[in-house]
Amino acid sequence: MANKSKSKGLGRGLSALLADVDDGDKRDAGSSQKASGGNAELRVPIEKVRPNPDQPRRDFAPEDMEDLTASVKEKGIIQPLIVRVDPNDAGLYQIVAGERRWRAAQAAMLHEVPVLVRTLTDTEVLELAIIENIQRADLNAIEEAMGYRQLMDNFGHTQEQMAEALGKSRPHIANLLRLLNLPADVLDHVRQGRLSSGHARALITADDPSGLAKKIIAGGMSVREAERLAKSGTAPSPAKQRKETTEKDADTRAIESDLSAQLRMPVSIDQTAGGEGGKLTVKYKNLDQLDALMQLLSQ
Image (cartoon, rainbow, N blue to C red; front, side, top):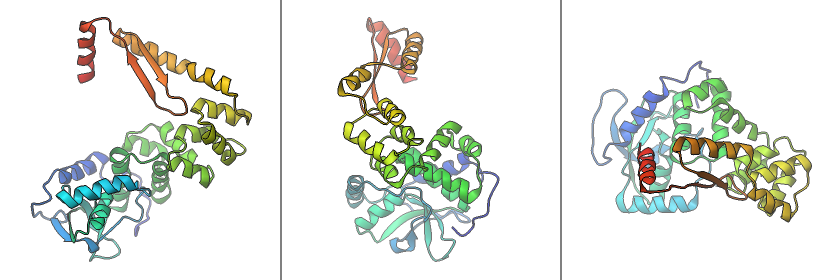
């Protein structure tokens, strides 16, 4: 971006920025609404719109883009793109939010796209791009980490500032940033979903993270198994793996106990072997307990 000066804060506030974008997203793309200053709703030639070069999202799943393109062909773009005047060319617009819609519009061979023009600083543009992807498009762990790294390197933000403004814990941001120290091939495994961020964290201090990553993928290991492998350098036997998948660690048992106490119903947590997901089961004795549980979940 043109302006790389370091700032002490995160622009005019995340809540104000998101409210501005959300307000634009709720408008009907087919209407033409004039506004004062730099907030005019327009339809502009698609060739005059450019992606943000510092956009943290790099991977666009082909199947997702195919579905979006089909929708755009049938219904057009319902939510306008959020853009600003390109800082390097006043005759063009730079995307702040909505690059997937822009790509789909290109694939659908649309000639124009609806846009909402906003006056935003470089810091605000990058901040909004990161937040949009994290909250709306499930940015993978590596892309998220690269976004935080950009905020630190380009704009001088600390982990504490980002944690407060973005609604994340400082350990969450710190753990993601540590992933960027891994070799490129391991990072690619995470991007492609072959390894979870939990698997990758287990490899950060390993002597041969690339070699161990291949063993983890080939063996379909859980995060706990990957942690043991990283420490010992050898994979557990199949019999030991089966035994470990049935055992629950102290943290899981503690969560079960806390939930059971709060709900006053037995709770069981079973993690899926080889991943970070799983199943949570709540047992109820009668319909009154079920009704009470439904009321809690609906709050």
